[in-house]
Amino acid sequence: MAYVYTVAQVRAAEQQLIDVQLAPDQLMRQAAHVVAVTARTMCEAPDRRRVLLLVGAGGNGGDALYAGAELCSTHGVDAVLLGRDGRVHERALEAFSSAGGVVLDALPANIGLYQLVIDGILGIGGTGGLGEELALWLSFTEEPQLPVLAIDIPSGVDPDYGSTPELVSTTRLPFNPRVAAFFDGTKTSERRLRQHVRADVTVTFGGLRRAHAVSPECGEVIYADISSGGRSLWETLLMSARENQEQTMLAWRAAPAERYRWPDPLRTLIPHRPRNLEPQPGDDKYTGGVVGICAGSATFPGAGYLTTAAAVRTTPGMVRYVGPLKSDIVRALPEVVISDSASKTGRVQAWVVGPGRGADAAAEAELTKLLGRPEPVVIDADALTLLAESAQLRTLLRSRPADTLLTPHLGEFRRLADSLEAFIPDPDVDRIGAVTALSRELECGVLLKGRHTVIATPADHLSSVDAGTSWAATAGSGDVLAGILGALLASSYAIFPEPGLALVNAPAAASVHGVATWLSAQTPHGPAPTSASRIAEAIPSATAYITNV
Image 1 (cartoon, helix red, strand yellow):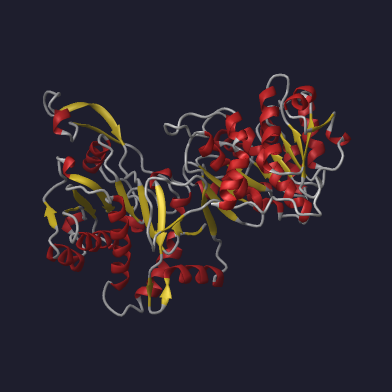
Image 2: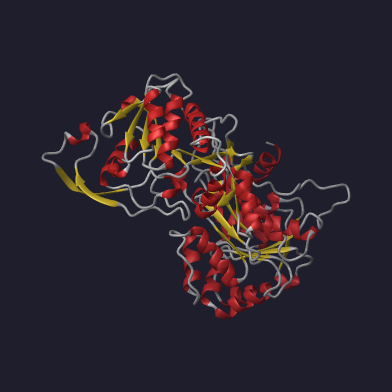
């Protein structure tokens, strides 16, 4: 877990530490040491190739140059100065040159000389695209998959929103001279290139920036603390946020990044652990949580099975199934208790409604009844379509005192947002702001699914979970997540029935889903495509992994 902050919060906290520095660039040199430790870890295999620094004009470029100076004791290091009008952090440049670093006149055409690129162009102070020249060179580095380490934020990625600049159009020859040789003249047909850095690893300081919580362009995010005047940046950020009553966010990562083993002082993100699910001597099926599943139909029977199976494998309590697939469900999962309708079930401590249910009048009537019940409700898939189409259902949702969690994917989110009069940012522009705005407007919890799942609650609690892999991009995986969510909300409600408390389990559910997906994709020969049913089967192992590793 790590706290997440805005650029304004980070700048204010850093300035407090800069004001009490005992020597010029004390804080910057600490950050540079962290960068050097990270770079050495990424270059740990014996290799004669060099390290290349992309150096901007500001503090990010200073970090890169001081880190390069430290790396010169073990590696050959080159730097390209990319600051506008030749601007550069002079003290850092002097330290780099004195240590034996080499300043190049231009971006190198022979990238085979390098084993790592360190991005120190913009950091949190810069915005906008990097331009055509850098876009051409960055596309060149992708061909041999040259690892990239970004300092603070991959250049070109907005540090507060995680958005990226528009692609840049070019007709210039490819940067790779071997490829350019196949073309006549000086131009090619128009191509569109990204003009931001795509990092394998991003290293940051004190806490995360909001882009780290939502942008896959950051790669694996690691962080370390730095300090000045007896105060650390981590402490200063947290205390300032609390004193100013500013909204903070928590970030988690489900599946581990396995490529590098990070030494101290580097820290990685971890999964959100669910509460201890092991039954105690006095527990029974009711104290473990009873979840009611209203999912599946004759048209989409698989959704009913996947949602129910996921709930069964998440907690030791009871799962009740409501719907037309009763015989099929109990045949596949004999531990499930079946019922004809929600009103005819026994005790239930949370509901899941919508996966594969359809959007007809019967489904609308079912959702209407569930919104009137006192237990938490997870609203997914077809039930979200009903909400987007019915102002009456949205009114019931807003007036509901019990916990409600909407779990849209991107398309469902946009349909819901379009149904409202209030302005909701587009998630591709501001993922955190979009989820927060929809949660406030509908007065309920919202979980926007994706590689980076973002969750907001009516109490203004914000969190994100990086799944760690993208293998969940498969049919039915959302149904599995809905079942996990319902089971964990029920287990929480069984102990703490007060409104608002059940929703704190949403990041844990996303973590379990992410780890289950990662485990289900493993084969003796490496990761491979998985399926929703395999993800559901891996839930117990995922829970054990999160709890014990």
